[in-house]
Length: 302
Image (cartoon, rainbow, N blue to C red; front, side, top):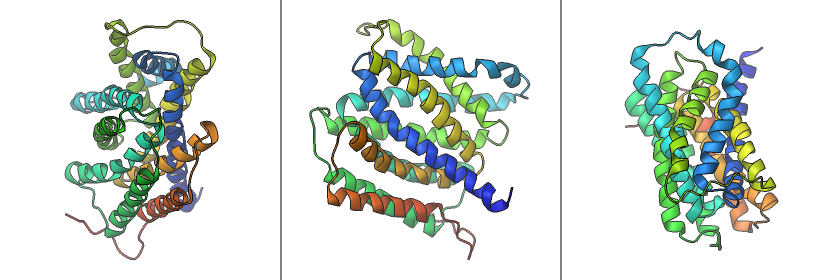
């Protein structure tokens, strides 16, 4: 395998992860139509945990470091625990498209945390790409129209922004842990901790657990547990272990674009000409921020 091919694998994995994550907003909306949000979140984590049961003997051979326990707990607390609660609240109040657009704030949050914690430098090219992608994402947001599915988009988008702060903490802690632990183990750790964390929520007052089989919502939960929790997080965790966290986070800007495209195909949303131009701007920004500058080393921006 050539060096060029090796460098392409993390990029392809990230694009695939972003495509899957974009579809999660639509899947959550469909799942919430038949089940309580807490039941949906626990269901996706439990299904993902079942997928990792076969790997437990392999995980037992990993050399644990006691000092890493706090980072593992912090990673899982940020995401899935707190992140999924905030995302569920967000999608009850805003549309899937708008929630996806707020994710454009994540790369800058990750870049700042990675600069402070991991001492990663931020090149001017990367910063320019992030800015271009965020501009495109904001353009998408302003060009969108309110719908009945978003009763309080302002509050919902604020919850999604708080979720992005949690996602930034997760990404940076993941990068720190990936030096000593395989991506598959870190993904499984998230699933197991998430299942334990969300199980008590099923017994809270007001949580109506529905055990009936409702085809579309039930399949959406299964999809979330396998393709999203297992597939998307697995691809993302692998890529973060191979490239700087700030570069990997730059691909998050693809989520608003993929989200709108999937919304158009699955939910019959429509895109106007201005929104298509904004999609192109986001793609250009992601390409610029992820492109390696061969002429010079990265210059830190403080």
